[in-house]
Image (tube, rainbow, N blue to C red; front, side):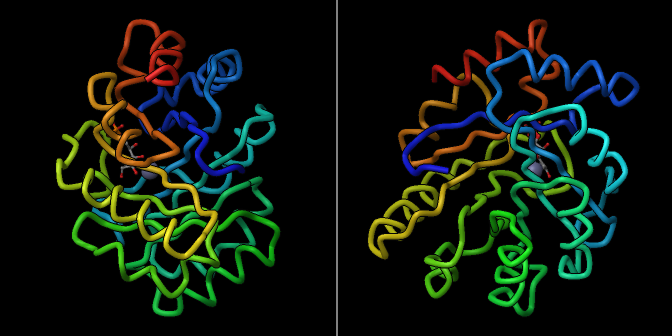
Length: 219
Ligand code: DX5
Ligand code: ZN
C-alpha cells in the first residue's frame, strides 16, 4: 500500500444482504479498490452487523483487498480468526484497546496490515507514539454504528492534523475516512489529505453503484 494514492472502499453494510453474492460481483466489476467490512458487536457500538462466516464467504468471492473495520471490544481475542477469515487489513478502535501497541504488533505478526480508528471525539495526537507502527489511520467522520449519517465537518481538520503528523514523523500510514462521504464532499476530504474514501449509502443507494464508485474515484 503506497502513501498519497487514493482508494475507494465501498462499505457492504449498506448492501443488500439477501443478494450479497451479486453485490460482491458488482464490486469486482467496478473500480472499487477495497471492500470495507464493518463488524459490530452491540457493545462497543449500539448495533450488530455481521461477522466471521460472512467475511469468509466474501473472501472466497473476491480478489480485492478485504478491509475489516472492527467496532468491537477486546479485538485481540478475534484477530487470528479474522486473519483466517481472509482479512487483509484489520482496523481496531483506539477507544476499544487498553494495550493498543500490543494489539498492533499482534495484527502485523499475523500477516495483516494494522489500522487504528479514531472516534469523532478522540484527538489525533494520541497516535503520536505509535504512528510509525501502523499502516492505516481511520478517521471516523460519523459516530460509528450506523450507515447513512451526516459527515461531521470537524473531521476535515482532523484529517489535516493527521497528514501533518504523518509528515512530521515520516510515517507511511494511509489515512482512511469513514462516514457520510458523498460525491459532493469527496474532493474536500481528499484535499485535506485523505487516501481512502469509505462509502456505504452513497454507493449502494445510488441508481448505478458502479458509476458512483467511478465518480468517487475521480473526485
Ligand atoms: C459506520 C461504518 C461505516 C458505514 C458508512 O459505523 O463504520 O463504514 O458503513 O456508511 P455511510 O457511508 O452510509 O456513512
Ligand atoms: Zn467502517
